[in-house]
Length: 438
Ligand code: GLY
Image (cartoon, rainbow, N blue to C red; front, side, top):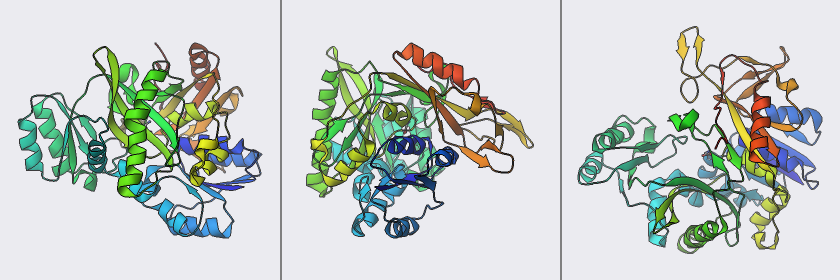
């Protein structure tokens, strides 16, 4: 089978690594990929990178090169309709259609749909007028979260403590347009208090298979301080989750959403569904409320979930595109996997200080120590570049690379990941030191 993976992040590196374990995969192309995947290709003749991004180039490549299955990593090509285009051309592709991807690309749509389907969501209202949003907020007696409707790289949800902050959030999103057109519409929703959790599943539109649980760390600094990031690390399994809770999420959220989408919108959701939840203690038990839906795998959650997956990812993706997921049995390793992301942190540059990821960060620094990292941990690149002339990798993004360790216990995985990440050196390297610390 010739598999094409679309994307270039750490998530796509671990996805490519997982596909490469499949004996069915005879050719594995990643578009455009990253330097870590390039390094895979040095040792595995099946793997290659193609510098393609545009939908028509990807379609032409898939047709000309006999791609059997395309797997889309990030949300952008999904919400731009890559799946619809491939399907219309008779090409097999894993991921939701543009209409289904609106669950992530329009928070207002997702909230309306879930509300209509009876899926538990916090109380909310959608607004296209800042004045109407302000009037609504002034009339509330509880704190809110103000969310940009459109895609904002995970930064468009502003959590507010009081009315003044909420009014400021409306200005930031709708008037100052910090995230551009993503703020043309906002969702104002009641702020819930509880435990945040993410639920990931594969679905073919009928069958839903939950993945192993993971915990991620969104804040930049230890102790969950500082600004939100794409994720600074994580671990799986997350023992805080139990089968009763999984059943509640399946019955109250995942099944009504996937089946409701098919019935109401005529859209079978095929791909990965990522449900961001708040678990609220009510009458002595946790009840799940949906904060947001994403239509792709989490990053860096993929880096700790996929290594635990014992079932062939190529087989899963194929079954999803065929509507045959119900025939597959899933196996997960009992080992604990923990991931720590090394980022480009605070550093002085020619024009003063760079605050560091998720703020402005420096790129270009050479990375050393990678060859010293033990073979018994995994290294996944996100923002790196291979410098052929200098013979080294260089920093090319905010999240640079991730060290992932799998061990029988979380404590052992944590020790191994932190022991190995210390060997990685570049100017400005910074990572959280409390991933997996109880
Ligand atoms: N780690 C959070 C995300 O992928 O959106």
